Length: 160
Image (tube, rainbow, N blue to C red):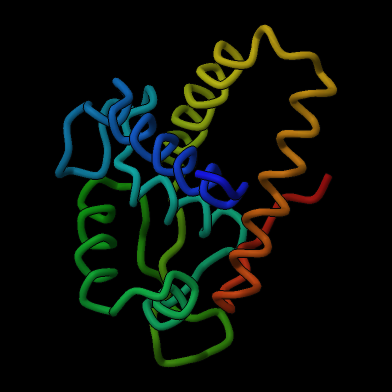
């Protein structure tokens, strides 16, 4: 562990472990939704976040965005439709492929989950100065955008 990248590898491994082992991650799985009080599966949370940022997307567009095969996305979106988180709509531009749009329930569940995550982060970072939090956020954003640049899959971000 002589190089900074060795430490980054180790710390990102631990971060992934912490996220995977958190009480939030250990809550039930399988349905893609719960009571709406912050109980989404990770895949549903990420997919709903993308739909919220981009608007309706087809399986093909989701496949390109996530780098996943259509069968995986079909399973995920089917579970999310059963849970009432997304709905299929015709392409507003007249295309053949139907698109997935986040429902009111999906938006509510996404916001509840996001609020729970932000609250947890607030608790973890409560002893950090606002400047430290801002620097950390900026470094994470740069790290993620560089990953996206290398992988060729940029992720939309909210406007400030």
